[in-house]
Every structure is written in C-alpha cells, then in structure tokens.
Length: 239
Image (cartoon, helix red, strand yellow):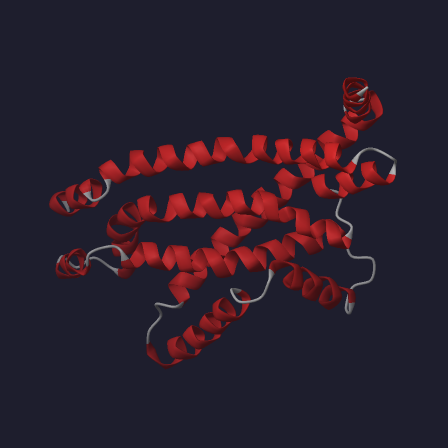
C-alpha cells in the first residue's frame, strides 16, 4: 500500500505536465542566486574600496557605506524583501516580482559580501603594501598586483559558501509570489500531493544544486591556499 502511494506520488511529481514547471522553478532559483549574488559581489567590491577612501569627502562616503553594511547585515532577508517590495510598489506599479527579488538579494548580498572582501583585503601583510608604495606603485597598481592576488584565496571560499546559502534562502522570496522551487512545492501540496513527499523531493533538489558548489568551494580553498603569496612576490621582484 505504501509502495503504491510512493509510486503514484513519483509519477505525479515527475509527470509531463509538472516536469516543465519544475525545471522552470529550478531555473528561477539558479537565476536568482547567480544574478543577485553576482551583482552583490560587484557592489560589495565597490563598497570595500569606498570604505578605504581618504580625505574629508572620503570620510563622508565611508560613513554612508558603513551604515549601509551595518544596517542590512542585521535585518533578516525576508524583511529586506518586503522593504524592497513595498518600496518599489510605492513608486512603480506592476513591478516584476523577479526584479524585486533580485534587488532584495543584491542588497543583502552586498552587505555580507563586502565584509568578506574587506577581510580578504586586510589579510594581506601590510609590509607588502608598504613595499609596493616604496616601489612607486599607484593605489590601483597595488590593488591589482599585490592585494587582489593574495586576497582572492581568502575571499572565494566564504563567498561561495554565502552563495550556497542563498540557493536555500531564495525559498524566502516565494513569500511574495516568486515562482521558485518552494513556491512550486506549495502549489503541488495545494493540488493534493503529500506535503512530506513533495518537500522531501524539493529538499533533494536543493541538495543537488548546492552540493557541487560545496565541493567546488573546498577544492578552490585547497588550490588557492597553496599558491597564496607566491604571485605578488614574483610581480614585485619583476617590477
């Protein structure tokens, strides 16, 4: 009896009508993660540079971006999503839910990834930055040839871990109606399928999406750690 029910649920879950919608929801989950976290990483890099700015105007900029980071790192992602939803709705009628979700993810990812990037930058020995300055490296030359090559091995593993976490956290945007995996799971339960079976299968799909990235993060951590520091030292000797 139980086997018959499981087979019936499997047939319905992977049925022709449902399979296309499942792929669509998986694609939405991946797109939200890649686009949101990708934009977040780019803005986080700019914020990290802004926090290193100097002078009076730089001090004002540092205060603004630091406030942004500190505020949004302490607000739950779901609350950020609702803030973005109602904020955009106040000015734009009929805004895309996908766009709202991307903006929310980008804001949240920017705040967290900026701290990861800042930590990576600060891991570079100060003596090497002083050596680059003594060799008349500009700020950008120091960044490109000394800081980035040594900080990337420190930045990438936690950045990938954050991205993996967001594959799972994209389920929260289903609360505003974005058609991703969790939203599709709720639809299937509403259509009469077993909640335990549906969300068991959804959990397996989330695992299948996140596990390869976990392995990639571990491989990169080992691969990059062994070469950290060698390239910038070689560049300084050749300069």
